[in-house]
Length: 280
Image (tube, rainbow, N blue to C red; front, top):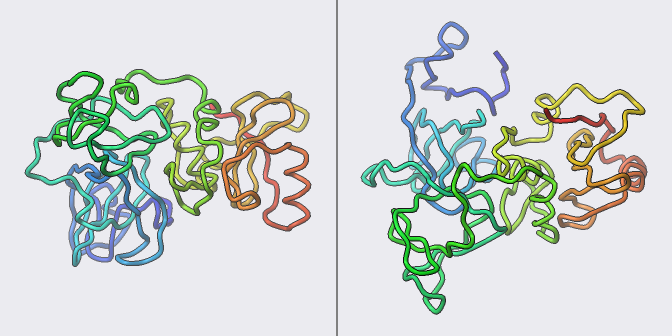
């Protein structure tokens, strides 16, 4: 078993039953299914600790432990960490599964089905929502809020090209560990794009390198959607000359010439080039 804390569903008090015989724990749990009930939340390395990754509304979670207003969870992609308990959907709410996902870079929750209503919290690409009805141009959610129907797709209606999805976020500001229209990092961009296409994808670039390897042999003709990896960074191949990445150089999601990026990153010593992978 990996000792990586990001992939280990255990705290210093409680561990998931799948870890029996591999870790020491004073208590064991099968976990409690939960979902993220807010538009956006940070997953932390420890209660009140460093931020690891952002999660989007509707993300499926497995609750492992609770401590002083924090809950330790495992996401569907296996990532583990601490959330503020208030970010979970209320257990008193009907346990309705999501029916739709947000297929545009951003939208809003509205208190009433009209464009003049005071828009509330912002939603980000990939948020999963439970639609229970419709009112004109708006979808009604189980929470009682409304979202423009044109911004939604059924969960089984997915695009095929992650690069096209990622390009819809061009200009989004760079934010380390971000996964939203308000701010996103390199691995967040890849994960959001792949998840929008219904494809599994880990959260961090080192985990993506492990999941999508091995690297292509030197000289292999490249394709749109191949992934370029450096130590600590990842980008998507767009075409014969360009990549797309959320990067600290422009502090945004931007296109860049592949050879120019390779030279720039090498000159800056920002991370060793690892190779190019082709996700299955």
